[in-house]
Length: 282
Image 1 (cartoon, rainbow, N blue to C red):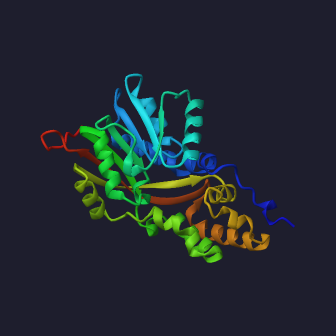
Image 2 (cartoon, helix red, strand yellow):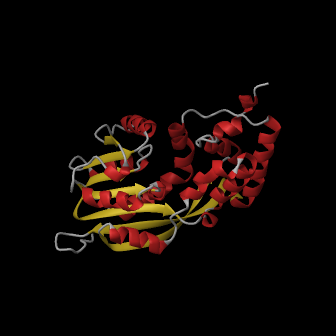
């Protein structure tokens, strides 16, 4: 019997990300980050680690015809999906760039705003990545980025990391811990300062992750990750036991409307030093 028959892998990971994660929480966090970035008509925007282009698409709606938006990522599949979703929203003017964040393929001082949503913590060379973000900004340009707080402050991640790790091995669920690996404010402040940023503000934000049906959301969400195939190949009864254990653990984070789990993130804004060595705030 094919153990995967009752465990559909929901299309490609980028498409599944848009279907499940964006409406559950990343869409709301995008709105918060965009607001903190203070995007204005005519701004030239770079969305670093753009993924499926959620931030880039929202930014494109704000900058107007006089502005411009670029999305940059190291995953070609994500970029192709980003282009597809942008085209659906008639946002074909967004430029999409592929490459290494330590060597961003964008001209020096081309951008007014750089945004990076939940990407910095994954970069092997964080300092170099921030230096590149600073390089592409005009003097006095602004940076807005977000990183999750520690995993104990994001109980949905913590629950999945522990339970799935118990079934398929902790190494397979390392991504959950990596997501929350840059939660120290002073470490963040030092990285930004060393990259040439000033007027650094690190703001704690709390939002609820919501999805109407946990039964529907959980398999869809899990299918985004590389370990989804390991789960698909598990014996059906073992897989159902694991899912039941996760859902029972998450019942405390649900209400009459479905999944309702708190998530905490740092939202960071900073300005590149101007030509006089000072930041130029909004």
